[in-house]
Image (cartoon, rainbow, N blue to C red):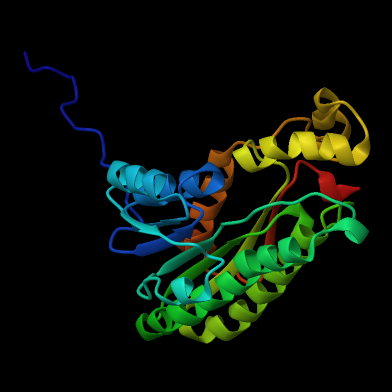
Length: 261
């Protein structure tokens, strides 16, 4: 009697980004690391761009990518980044918390160089390649602070609002060439950047560190938890997929209802 058991093998995962090359900044940790891992799992070859050379090399070895250690505050170094990316994820960022009248001018300038000028320079280099092949995806890791402001974050809020504008310009210019450009706007994500803010926020608001999470970071979202980096990475992957081919010039909010107020 013949067996009725199926001998069919499980279908291989669809590697939608096979043959594509992604460049992810700030890729050695936090959201950037999750994005690099997720894009690589979807078949993309990933440039792991980060200031932390050892961490970038370790991740590149893990995902079969290429480590590109670089200081994004150095314009000449940015101009030497690879120009053959089909996908660009502008994720790198830094934070500084202080009242505006006490905000160090050099910190303000540094944050703009890393979070606005560097994305501009990277896109200026990579868009010609995308245009030539008639396909490209630009995903800018903005923030709820690209849509709303918070006290004591003059440089960060300014940079994220500027990144929103840059993203929209790329959407308009890139559309005839098959290139989409969007922002992803998470609230507070469970990353070292957020964890390092706790003491600064406590000092700025005059409250104990243990109260910062509930009284400051999670005060406005309706969903009272931090976002996980992988959740953001999955949104980035979707924006790179064929299913999102008609979505451009938009901001995908992942803020737990923060902007619903």
